Image 1: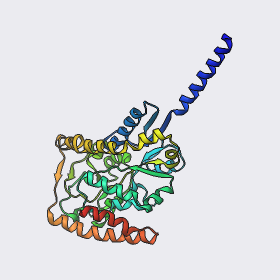
Image 2: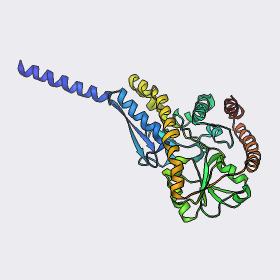
Image 3: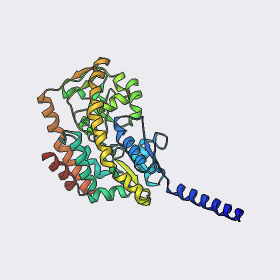
Image 4: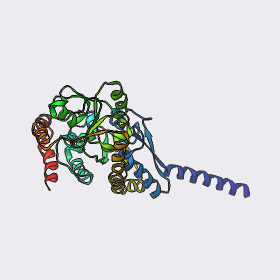
Length: 335
């Protein structure tokens, strides 16, 4: 009898063990570079999800160990990992609909505004369909302030000074620089330091956090305070099959944590990151270049309208409701 009871207890223990193991969920998350302001919402999401599930749902964040950043969307499509971050400008043909957020001079003023507009764009059926080609579901945006240039050599003070200058700039920012004679060069953020140091490029377009994180401030001699040609759009996505396969409790924990994670990101960027930016420029002795109103007005005039018109024409020819997507952005900016 004792032996029989012991056997039954052992089987029950094993069954419970398998059941508990089955309840645990681990997702691999592909990022790049290192932990920085750009990734704080993902870090916060991992923290919240683990806390809400008592550790039964964990996000294993990898900075470059799972994929190259230009290949994160490909990795998501085949289920190589369950979550990733990518930037639309890295591969415009893979995600054409969301490149509307990378058009120059959209007029977005704050990170909160950019986050709200991005969310609205992401909900459009054309965007959902676009990302579905990669088995991807967008979870949240990565709002960033307007890009500005940090560079070496003679500092530009007029738009014509960019003529022939090789600039690391992607997406709409790259198109803006090309319009004023610059030579935009597309490369990943992790390649930028060596490119600037070796003279492959003379200037780099980044948001403040990236200038610090990828160390352009260690080389730069000047930076533009108010060129503000645009920014890039870098959503965080999940593999759709993995998302659908989550147990209800784990899916609820994930989805209910998105807004709090994004709020944390914005507060951190507006506070910690921007508080550090000014002192870093001063410490490194980087000269601030501020363009006058006439130059900025000229820049916007020759870039914004033509870029928007070309984007709408190109995307419409591909069967994308480009005007609808642009109107979402323009109407929300106007409000």
